[in-house]
Amino acid sequence: MQTASSGAPATIDFWFDFASNYSYLSVMRIEEAATRQHVEVRWHPFLLGPIFRALGQHTSPFVEQKEKGAYVWQDMVRECHKYGLPWVRPSVFPRASLLASRVATLGASEPWIGAYCRQVMLRNFAEDRDIEAPADIAEVLAQLGLPAERMLADALTDANKLALRHATEEAQAKGIFGAPTFFVGDEMFWGNDRLDDALARCMSTHTPLRT
Amino acid sequence: MQTASSGAPATIDFWFDFASNYSYLSVMRIEEAATRQHVEVRWHPFLLGPIFRALGQHTSPFVEQKEKGAYVWQDMVRECHKYGLPWVRPSVFPRASLLASRVATLGASEPWIGAYCRQVMLRNFAEDRDIEAPADIAEVLAQLGLPAERMLADALTDANKLALRHATEEAQAKGIFGAPTFFVGDEMFWGNDRLDDALARCMSTHTPLRT
Image (cartoon, rainbow over all chains, first blue to last red):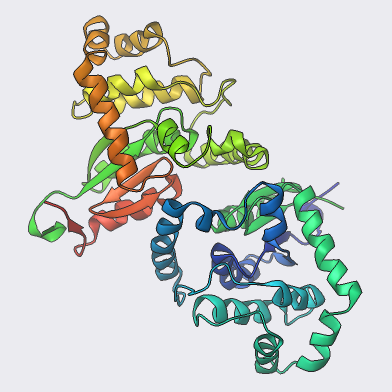
């Protein structure tokens, strides 16, 4: 067991799905906020769909519960205003995020992961555009100066598909029931509303980090 | 249509259930926070049970979803620490809040409503004691120097029982799906995490207030 005070870099594990509107808020904020606090972000793309189905839900709770759904779109307008983020309510929700997630799985430890995730999220939640087709993701990758064709092929290998499936199974095993979810060591923080608390926890010298 | 700038007092409508742990946080905080910002609090006790049942849930989502439930008790420890509130995880959850709510209905516009609600909440979430029996509520009322016997009788009149039922129906009609929920005019804010935003909205000169 190491602690942050022992010299290990403070780290936050960030679990998100490109289909999730509250994940949008955290994807846009986390890299800047973490850098400011000298915290390293570990990106964990995963799929909420199988998690929801295992919990007996057919789709997003914002679709299943019409009252909550109606509220969430009001809340998103205010939250985006609060954080200075653009917002257009998606005409399709939740959007299929499988391919976008496979590419994120491929690049989870690459220097472009943050920029890639922000571009995909902006496409979904600020431009109301699909993120499902290879052409959609190729456009995002090309914007970032990345070799789209090769990366899409790599994203579709069996090994990479399996890596995303394993990430989703790991999310489930960790008790994740929604997104975004943050872990600081073993400690779970759920929701964009807890990102600041999770980062503060990283900075606490008493934070146990797993070794 | 009036606006806050027209001289009408800024008002926040506060919907809560004594059984709800996140309502506990807001009940403890709202009067002080609102007073500081010259906002008037209108207290709306209601029952979440019928709302949940109408949404197809049998009980609290924190009981129905074991993963979310496990998380919530961790989150409450941190949230209470953040706000400087005492916390003991209730050994019974959710606690029957009917009688406590009927007394709150009786006193919703009385000067003692805030103090009463805080005492009931502390009993449930800081002392792990029941709030169901007449003796429980009588003890709270006596602590506040209120005539417990007469008030319990008044709380159990048909008119007062009906008033609480109507409040719950009104909550449902307003699209409330959880607690605490705040309204500033027609605008809904859900959850203790949005109390500060709701109070800030009260202070905005552009806030439309219903007349």
